[in-house]
Length: 256
Image 1 (cartoon, helix red, strand yellow):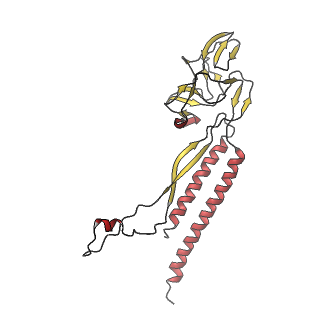
Image 2: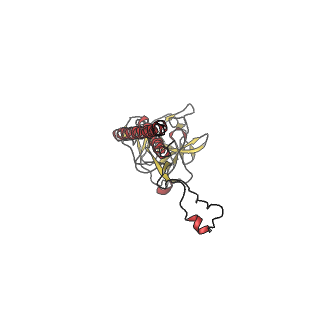
Image 3: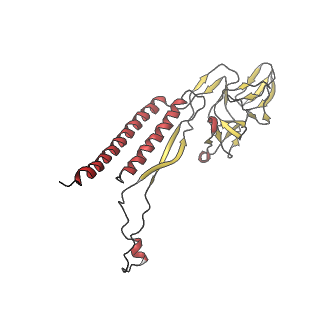
């Protein structure tokens, strides 16, 4: 097989991976608090071994190191590197639900999961059968003093996260933030994980609203089309190289 196929194949697989990320972004365009992902890649150059001198031919270590390597030196491969998440805020939408919360500016809500503490920008909240404040997955939303239980009555959530029922404070929502260079990473169920968080001293919450996804659906669709075309081009090039090898085997070496 033509060795030139392998770098092209790695590029085709990279385009396939990018399209999977774009598709996931598109699937979550209506998910509250979702943050868009972008797959980053890195170039990999094959490791070459120096040509070993023939028996009887003397060659020092320096001569072996600078010896001409096996194969072509211009070959390079591409491989997935890191997943980059864009933390730009999404559009704020009015819901009218007094338990819904949108964080204005930086910050994340803290929730307690079976896997430990996680963070989210999805402010679609509700009460469970114990009247605990929970997120859309049923995980308790943490306050400054632990889980928040809200009794029946007239509910009000202030911009600073103070929860009042009949003008009596029953808890304060904890909002966490992270250094720019140590932002949380995505984990299961659309939540974020990190141990670098610190409480926000003056959070700005908007009750009765949620933050929508920051995915640009039109931009992601354009990227998917471009990725598909690049993938098809790589596929055609592989087919061409394969056909060239077939011709070389069947026709060029034929004895007439």
